[in-house]
Amino acid sequence: MGYISEVAGRGLAKFLTKPIRQSTQVATVTQQQLLENLQPGDVLLVEGDTRISVAIKYLTQSTWSHAALYVGNALSHDSPWQLPKVLIEADLKEGVRAVTLAQYAQMHTRICRPVGLSDEDRKRVVDYVITRLGHQYDLKHVFDLVRYLLPTVPVPARFRRRLLALGSGDPTRAICSTLIAQAFESVRYPILPEIQRTWSDNPMHVDCYAEIYHIRHYSLYTPRDFDISPFFDIIKPSIANGFDYRSLAWSDNLQKKGLLPCGPENSDEGPSLE
Picture 1 (cartoon, rainbow, N blue to C red):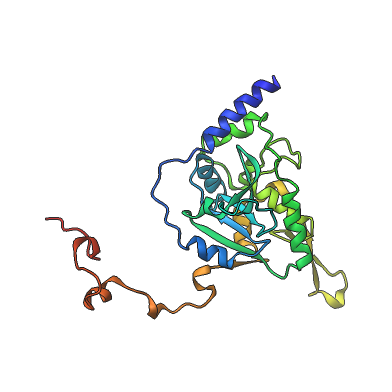
Picture 2 (spheres, rainbow, N blue to C red):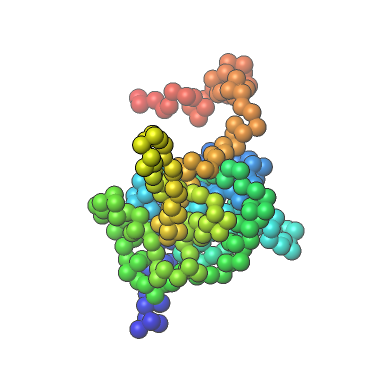
């Protein structure tokens, strides 16, 4: 029975990770800009284009459906003619793997950077995900995959996080955001903890309270949490090194200067309806 479930699970995983036809995504930054601005320990969020991405976007009410950790040059690179593998992610079909930055060069992405993370802890976070390379999803739990076949079934908001917890709960069976959440949890770095306020019992200090942080279980983290976390900075490569809006090459200005042919393909007014 376990073998049959495993085969069925692999079939479903292949179906769910297949890209779907949708409007063309245009990356807002170039691959070179990403490479120049990423630092080891950064989380790269991705707006995916697969069937399971649609479900994750719906359940999290977010643009982001996938997350990967940038590890820089931490992995050996023996072939100079190949692009280096600088991201580690958990893929539903392939498991925890290393990929190149070109994997997401044509997709919308966002860099989330942990603020104040020490160099020592940054290395520990990177080493944590590297040691998990090769770990796989537990695809025997077919019902965990079936839920994604109907990605937009109405689900109460309070249950959406738990619908994303995939697999048997074995820590080695990671999903993308779970893997990264475990890595930061290993150095006690907060992502989106639950905060409990405890008020003072002393009548002389009734306005005093303490904030107690509680770690949310790693299986409940989603890619969106890194985006909205108060402890992660959002890095935008197009403005990180300075931005001057006056230096942009607008098509109408170039046409006026005779530097751009004025034809239908270069017109801002769109095609004629006549």
